[in-house]
Length: 163
Image (cartoon, rainbow, N blue to C red; front, side):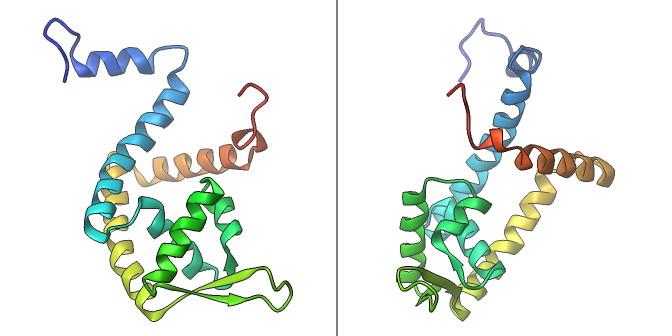
């Protein structure tokens, strides 16, 4: 809540987006705003952390994926990914199979129950995506995606000399 005498929220946001940190703040604002809405829904509706559905999406998209490979698609600490994979296995949404090439590696596959749940979640997420990006034209959406891909391809996104 903004105290009396404070600038209106839109003015403060404009000031932040006009600052020397504007690019990072703009990305953070969009990501955090979406996470606030999406996380609350996923946690309330499905009793799982928000990265549970994205891990299930990755496993469904790439059958036989290893837990550590999920981190390349959805950057999260490996222990968080391991915990959410365990949750998905315990709920019979994902099954593990020992790799023939490496007995230490477990390959992940969605179960029919997991595929069904993902279809339900995916429909809501697609609707949220359209809602969130509704202010952009199709061309602007494609430009946004191209810029995100370019940033994602840069190794400095995942490693920093500064931090």
